[in-house]
Amino acid sequence: MTSKLLFKEMGLVIPGQELAAGMDYLPGVGTLRSGDNIVSTSVGLGDVNGKVIRVIPLKGKYIPKVGDTVIGKVSDILISGWRLNIGWAFLAGLRLAEASRDYIPNDADLSRYFNVGEYVVCKITKISGTKFIDVTAKGPGLRKLGKGRVISCQSTKVPRIIGKQGSMISTIKEATGCNITVGQNGIVWISGEDSKMEFLVEKAIRKIENESHKSGLTETIGQFLEENK
Amino acid sequence: MAKKFQRNDKRKIDEIRPMEAKVGVVPSAEGSAMFKMGKTIAIAAVRGPRQVVPAHKQKSDRGLLRCTYDLMSFSVNDRKRPGPSRRSSEISMVIENSLLPAMDLSKLPYTSVDLYVYITQADAGTRCVGINAASLALADAGIPMKELVSAVAVGKVDGNVILDLDKFEEDQGEFPTDIPIAMMPKVGKITLLQLDGKVSQKELDEAMKLAEKGCKDAQEVMEEAFRVKYDLDGGKKE
Image (cartoon, rainbow over all chains, first blue to last red; front, top):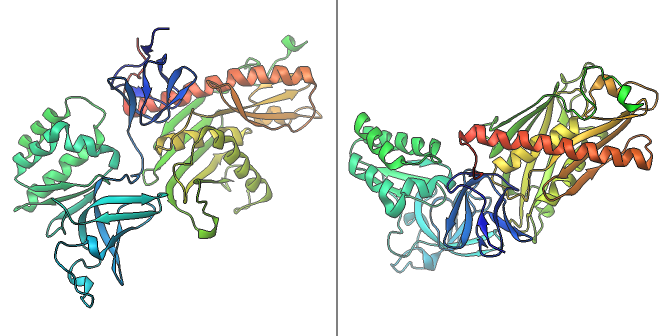
C-alpha cells in the first residue's frame, strides 16, 4: 500500500484529523498512530520533516523538557539551594552545586547570589514525573539577569520568536539594539539603552504572537520595526 | 406513523437546532469555548495543567481531569439557586467521564486539568452542549486529544424518536424519554450513553443512528470554529 499525506503543510490541523495514510510515515509530537493512519492530537500547524509528521501547537501551557533553556524567577531560598518559578505547575529546584562556577561556602548568604524576585537563565537537567525539576545555572549563556524588562508570552510561540536559525530574533536585535534572551518557557528578557526601544521589542513580540501562524513573518516584523522606530 | 410527525419548530426528525461555536471566549484561561445549540448556550474554560489542590488527590501515574458543571442562576425561567447541587455534581462527573476516553493524561502526572462548564441559557440538552463546549476548550488549551468529543441528545416524543429535543418537546407527552449520547465519530466510540425513560431495542437502534449523524454534524461545527479563529482555510488537501 502506498503512503500518502492527507494535509497541507503548515495548514491548520485539528484533533482527530487524519494526517497520513500508510506505514511509511512516522508519528511525531502532537500525533499518534491509529491503525495504519497518523492522526493529529492537537490544534496546530502540520509539518513534515522527512518521514516524521508532527503538529506544531498554536496554544498551550509550557511543559518542561530536559535540555530546555528557560528563564525562572526565584521564588524561595532554601537551606542549600533555590526554588524557581518557570511557569509550570511545579517549582524547579536549583541546587547549590549547580548555581555558580565559584565555590559557595557553607555559611554563605544565598540571597547574595540569587535573591527572591530575581530572574535566572537556567537549563533543565532532570525531570522526574513532571513534578521534580532540576535546573543548572552553570554553562554558557546561563546567568542571573540584570536590569531589563521581563515579559511573558505563549511558550508555543517561542520557535517563531527565535525564527529559523535565529533569523527573527537577530532582525529585532539589529533594528532596536536591544539585548534579548528568550526562554523556552515563553519568558523574554529585554534590555536596551533606550526604554522606547524596549517597548518596541515588546510590541514586535506581541505581533509575532498574534500572527505566528502566518507565513513571511520575519519580513513583516522587519517592516514593522522600521516603520515604528 | 413516524413520517406524519410534525415538530414544533418545523425541524426534520434528524435535524439539530442551529449551532454556533466560538473558541477563545475567556482570554485569561488557558483554553475556552462557547457552544450554542438553539437556545442552549454553554461556556467552558480550562485551567491547567496545574498543581492539584488538595495535594492528597494527586496521582503519581496520571493527571486528573476535574470538571465543574453548573447552571447560571438566570439561565432558567425559575431562578436556579446558585451553588452545587445533586444534579450539577452528577453532570460534572458525566462530562468528565465522557471526555476522558479521548484524552491521554498519563504524560502529565501529579497535575490536574480543571474544566469549568457553565450554562448561561438553558433550553434542554445542557449536558450535551456542555460536553461540546468542554472538548473545544480542552483542544484550545493544547491538551492532547484523540478526537473532539461531540454530543447530542435523542428523545422520544409520542412514540417518535427525534434528534436534539428542545424544552418544549421535552415537556410533551406523558412519558418523555431522553437519551444524551456523546461519541468520537471518527474513531466510532461511544463515550456517554444515558437513558431517562423507556425505549424498545428497535427505538434505541434508531436513536443511535440519529445520534451518530447528529454528533458528526456537531463535530463539523466545532472544527470550523478553529478555522475561523486562526483565519486559515484548513489543513485538508484540496
